[in-house]
Image (cartoon, rainbow, N blue to C red; front, side):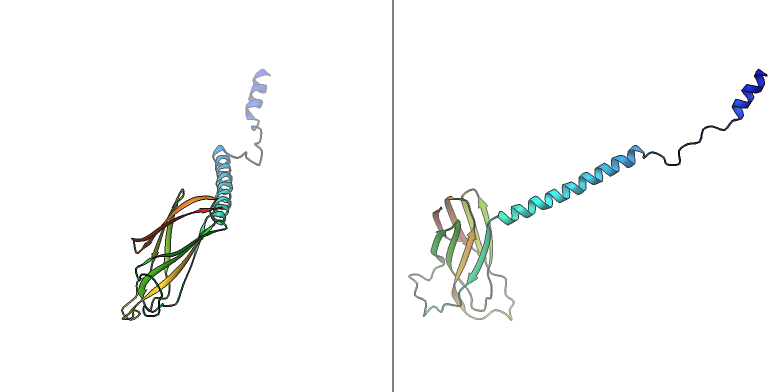
Length: 170
């Protein structure tokens, strides 16, 4: 009888496993990492958008061609002809001499503490676009907003220094 009981225990099928298997550690780790990456991406996008919204911006406009014979300038050399320090903005008027057919100027600028470097440049004109004349232009550059303080500005035209100025923003 004892033999028969042991034999019957061996013949019984093992207990059935649950139909839903628990998630493996690799799947769980992947899910957690995916959530962290998504949350990090949203955080970076939010921070970048906020910092760009508060970052100083530049706006440029230019005068029409000021013919040399009509221009009333003390000198026809490129220079800073005006600087205003108003409402946390720096407004510069810069005299540059360029091809008469130039339509736009480009401005690159770098801020390092209270030192600001502004580089005014013109896009290259093709042979068909360029005219056989040069004109003095006044380029109006509006930089800001900046925190209050003393600022030093150096203006370049195609990489050459054409003027420096400094002022206090309140």
